[in-house]
Image (tube, helix red, strand yellow):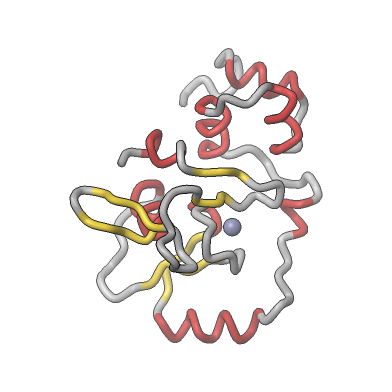
Length: 146
Ligand SMILES: [Zn+2]
């Protein structure tokens, strides 16, 4: 899998999470094949978009959503970080920043918009930007470097 192929299995949620739509096989985490191995989809997302995962480290979800593979929601930590985070967070997940339109577009989202077969209006709603912005991204008037 490369970034483009990976994004074909991603469904962007209004709260900014990327839901993995391919295999889960009964696990709370998504799974993906990459270079002959089965990976957890969120670990693969981290490896593809952010870089190597040092041995022994876990890829943790800042958004507390196990099926999410948005690299921006992922961070490295140890198993004890993981336990502490889960305990501290409980049910008080706060991703209001992304929910209420303060989210800015990122390189990942721009690639996703260009890959998507959805219409401009639908993408605009999903990303909380104007249709003109989506059109400009698709015509490469915006984010030309990608
Ligand atoms: Zn997320």
